[in-house]
Length: 513
Image 1 (cartoon, rainbow, N blue to C red):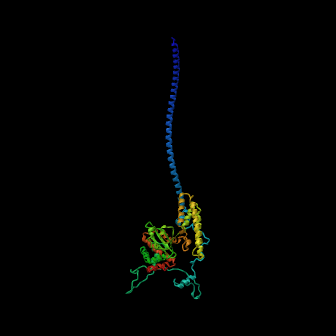
Image 2 (image 1 turned 90 degrees about the horizontal axis):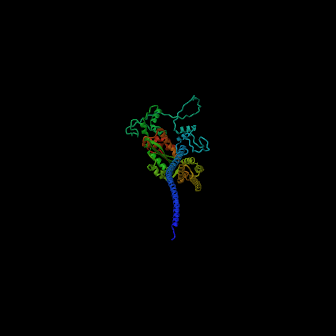
Image 3 (image 1 turned 45 degrees about the vertical axis):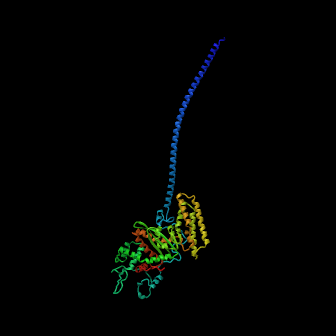
């Protein structure tokens, strides 16, 4: 039998050698694996450290992003606020440049800009020379005028001789003067006789001294105390009328004038055009208004607490008026009258202001067009025309509308925002009230401006400046009534003093229109 032990031993040696070899490899691989595991662990630790760092960085980025967003929001708010403030600064600077030439500010406000008061920048220089114009009726005293007055018996005639009258030859020189002297009129009422009105007391003041006091109050805008001093002074202290008595004279005149005031209102109602405006006065420290309604021959003043629609509706003259009403763009007045014209003098100021604020060309073009239309209308009226043809009116209207469209286009790029808004509002007004601004083209009896009414209100502003206003509404109404009588008498070329005397003598109207 063959001995296989040696082969088996050899095989076992080979197996052990193989095992040793494999064991070495396993140990080598194990060591390598351990090294890789160590590296992997190190990398995992590094990854975890990196992940933490990334997390920290992400949190930092988030905080920075939030901070950036907050700063962006703050910057946007500040940018908008800065833009608003810049616009406001520009607007306030623009307001500081306002004067009587480019706004409704009174001429007295012009002094702040270095321009003396009552200098109107908007008044265009003409080619006429200074002084009285051709055809103006002068007031120079002439010998002919003196002789006409003597012949009419309107003036007392006294003669003073110089030199020796026996020579027979003399040269005549006239001297105009007045005599002021107190007079006591004795009234003797016999049995059966009727005591005249106003003579109930044993001693009363006559109508002439009452008329003088009322005229000083209305025309001179003199306080009652000062009127007392004036009358006492010119009578050498003989007539010391109390301030209360002078107030009573004016109050009586206001009552006596009712019929005349009604006649004034009726005359304005009968006319085709009336001009109205209002000015601020103070009453017991509060703001109120005096409104006037004027025509060519008459003017009626009213005292009003406000100038809203409710107060205007209380004026019977306005509610009944059926003609053209000219005013300064008071929209509440559009509820009265049949047609409306707007004052172009105010419009020209707004256009000048727009040119200054926006540097626009359209507003200066429209200003030139309005002056051109006024000149054309005045020349046509002077030549005897009473109206324009429909073609002429249409031609001017088209040019007006073309300038408005130019303004719309320029307004798209107007800056700043407040100027853009104001310019747009002006354009809207010009377009909406175009026919009212151009009414003077269609009707030659309508003035280009509302200056007639504004001139009539200057007396009220004088009153405000001199006396500081009124104590109550009754005093303001009394002043309005007296001023209505005085200004209408002047407009009708009637003697103001004689008109007031007539009203004191009788409540019958003194105006015959």
